Each structure stands twice: as structure tokens, then as C-alpha cells.
Length: 315
Length: 303
Image 1 (cartoon, rainbow over the protein chains, first blue to last red):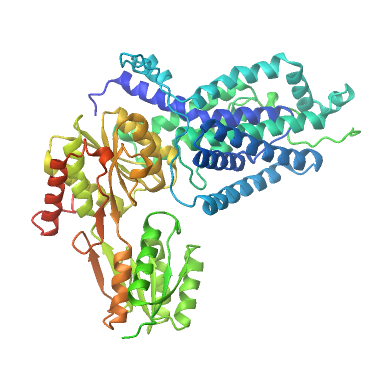
Image 2 (image 1 turned 90 degrees about the vertical axis):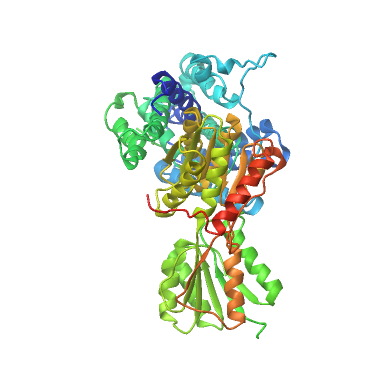
């Protein structure tokens, strides 16, 4: 297929990457809030699966994608709340309890799917927006820019909208200041009258909500199906992206785009018949994750209290 | 002729409700019950070890025939059958090894050839895509059959073929399909399990066509799914039960199922795609299918 131009290939990769970054973005931005306040939630994958299933089920029954989104967000938030209870109130070891939430989400979403739907079904989720004019011309057909940036669903654009919103909240609001303070020095924040527990409850619940939406972005927007274990590690990679992005929304955005671009590139490498064994191509994204995490991230930016439960009167 | 033959059926990965392999096998079992008034039990997929335990439980008690479906049950069946040489076993979709195992295998490539013809007849961009899941010998064989069907119509049609590398990730399937469609393919044949479900959604979004496997997937995207090539797993299940009832069960035998034996079929062409798969094209497909059955056309499996 070498007659296909270089530009067309780049456009193809960019279009795919932009779409594919969606679930990573929702999940990783939610996780950023939790980690900035000092809580590592490793259960994102499980929360995504619950969100993916519940959102899908709601759309399957009612046909309304917005209701599906709402249900997925609520279910995710509930799991986030439970995670907050376990890690803030019960002060459990976060790495371990997160894995528990992952296993729960994986098992529960599979079980619920089997008992309610149980077979391959599709739904009409969020449609792709092509912005067509009455003459039949669609803005998404505009060469390069239109082809890359248009023709995605609302949930895709929503994910990118979350980046500046998250940046603003974290850096320009009292809420953001409190979150950062709680993650950096909970004792000092407590002395200043900020409730460490309340902040952490909120951020972790919000992280769950975003994970639920991340799952729904797969099941009612990108794929419009639900399958057991369909997130295939996206939730875990989202946690890694927070480290990669040095706990900033913009860093997370870059990481998500890089990761999804390599994922898309990997398939193009295969399709174009470049001389790379397909097993190696399949490994590329994961190798990249390991390398990216091994080298560049700035540990200095890590919230000092990350994974450390807070107890008043310590020190 | 006894009418209370007892049959055990071990299902494969995916379980009941897959609208595919397992459901087809189970439907065969239920049909056999209606036809011959048999008694049966079934076991869902757990793991090769636990499946072997289920098979062994049946072998130990008074079951007359123990059937397992799917390649993944080959090991357990071979093992348990060797331990109980006086019991009758059947393995569907893979050749078992043992004098008391009757095996059914499929000539999928007959169906793959016919859908290859279909793809070549409908493509307007003259680029046809093949999307495999894992890189396994069976999928390779399917690809060869499909590619031959395409070339049989017009050797100058471009054929692109890619493998996701696995069967379980719908996201990767969607991405790969997207890639092939962007490269100019307007019809893809997907043999990629759950990855293929993602590809079907992509076909719908792109307004392109897809040919599916495993089950009739037309309901997922009525305008995108042209047809599906389906294995009838129930057919050999009924056949082997009938053989046991009529006391002509033969172990160590491998029976091959294609169109002629009722082991393969193509999902009906729906009105939603009849403007693409026009009646003349449907006629050609039927003719090709007839020629494959009568061996006027021989699908070559060697590259």
C-alpha cells in the first residue's frame, strides 16, 4: 500500500491516537487528583470495568447514552468512595487495597454481565460528530485538520476538555491548593484547618467517578459493546501515566497521547508491512511504558505524602 | 435401540450465551434430546485441569458418551480417554488422539473461500482486508482460503492482511480495522474473536463493510455486516449421539465437516445489505458454494 502518502499515514495515526487516548485521559486525570492529595488508587482498572458495564447496561435498557454516562459516573464514584473509606478511614495499605478493588471490579462486572445480558450485544452510544453541512459536505472531511480533529464523539472531546479544567482547579483554586497541601504536607494542612480526610475522600471519589466515565468511554462511545475484562490494562497504564506526567494534567495529556500514538503506530507498522516482526510490534507500547517510567519522571515532584495514611498528632 | 443414552458435554472458553461456538454445541445437544430422548449434563469451561475432572466424573459413572468441544479441551479429553479406554469420547473442532475418541474437524476454508469471493465482488476501492486475531495455524488457514476466494474473482485486487496478536481486546481490533479502512479497504473479513467486535463497530462508524465469523453478527451493525461465516458445532454433536444410539460409534476416526456435511454455513444476507450484496452476487455465491461442495473448485491450503 505504498501508494498511500506519508501525510495520509500520519493523519491516520493521529486520528486513531486522538480517539484512543480518551479512556487513558479520563482515568489518569481522575487518578491525578487522588495522588496529588496523597492517595494511590491502584483499583482504577476495576472501577473502569464497573463503569463500562453499568454504563453499557443503562444504554442497553434505556437507549439513552447520557443516562449511561450518568450511571457509569455514579457507579465509579461509589467505588471511589469505598476506596476512600478503606484508604482514609481504615488507613489500609493503598497498593494492596487497590488491587482488591481491581479484582472486585473485574469479577463483579463479569458476573453482572453474565447474569443480565450474557451475550454479545451492541448499543447505540455517543455518535461521532461529523458536522455535516446541508450540501452533504462534512467538516470532518477537511484535509488533515478536519480528518484528525473532527469526527470523534462528544466523550472524546470531553476528555480533552478535562485537561485545562483539571489544571485550573489544581493550580488556581483554593480547592486545588488544599489538595496539593494535603498531598505534600498533611500535618501542616491539618494545622491550618484543612480536613485531610475530607479532601482525600473527595479526590478519591472523584477519581472513581472519572474511572467510571473512562470505562463508559469504551463501552458506550469508542466500541459500543461490553466484554468481560474489556479494559485490558488501560486502568493500570493510566496510573503509570500519572507518574509519567509528573502529577500534572498537561503531563498526563502528553503521556496519554504518546502512549496511544505508539499503540496506533504499532498497528500501522504491521499494516504497512514494514519489516518488523509482529510480536515485537505488539510489545512496543508496553516496552515504552516501562522505559518511560524507568527514566524521565521527576521524582522530586511526587507528592511527599503519597500512599501514606494520615493520622493526626503524628510527628 | 436404547432411548436413555446419557451424554456429557464439556463446553469451551466463552461459555453459554456466546451466541457462537458453545451455544451452537448446546443447541445440538438439545436438538438431540428432542430427537432421541437422551439424558444429558453439561459443564462450563473452567480450566484444562478442572475440565478433565468433570470429564473423569462422567467417565466414572454411567455416561455412554462424553463430548468436549473446542481445541482447548483436546488435552483433557486425550488424557481422560486414555484412562478410560472402554468409554466413548468425542472431540469437536480438533483431532483427538486415542482409539476411543471420535473427532470432528472443519474445512472452514470452504466458507472462507466463498466470503473471499463476496468481498472481491463488492469492493469498490479494490482493496480487501483480512483481520486475524492471534497468529495461529487455524487463522492462517482461514486467511489462505479467503485470499484464494478474492484472487479467484480478480487477482489484481489488493489484499491486505494483519493480525491483532490476540483474540480478546476489542480496542485493538477497532484500531486495526480503522487502519485498514484508512488504507482504503472497504470490506474486511474479521477472524479475531472479541477483537472483531471492535472491528464491527468501526465498520459501522466508517460506513464500510465487514464480514464476520463465529456467529451471525448482523444484529450488531445491520448495514455494515454483509454476512458471517458460521461453524455449526451442533451438527457433529447430533451426529455422534446418533451414532452411539444406533450402535455404530467409531473411535479413532476423524470426520471432516464442510458445507456438504452441514458443518458450515453463511448467515443469511439481510435486506439491510441487499443493495450491496445484490441478488446476482448472491447467485454467484451460491454457485461458488455448489462448486466447492462438488469439488469443481478445490481450495488449496499450501501457500
